[in-house]
Length: 65
Image 1 (tube, one colour):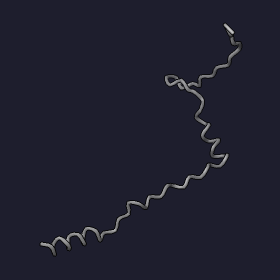
Image 2 (cartoon, rainbow, N blue to C red):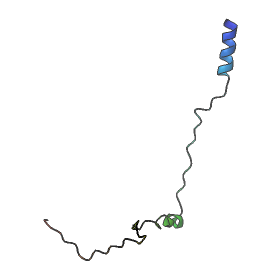
Image 3 (tube, helix red, strand yellow):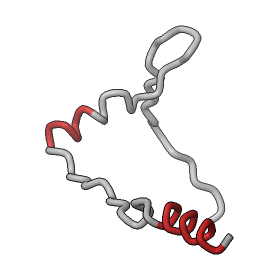
Image 4 (cartoon, rainbow, N blue to C red):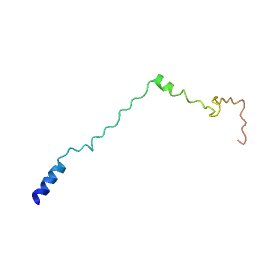
């Protein structure tokens, strides 16, 4: 019984464990031209007509202060 237990323990604990070898991905900043491509879809678009929602404020009324 003791020999069987020792053999089972040796088989279980002899395996390679890789639980501590986690590497974080290397993140590089994008180039300025690639960053400008991200601004392409930043304009709000009306989902029903597909037209851009362009707003030009002519005058702002401030009340109170």
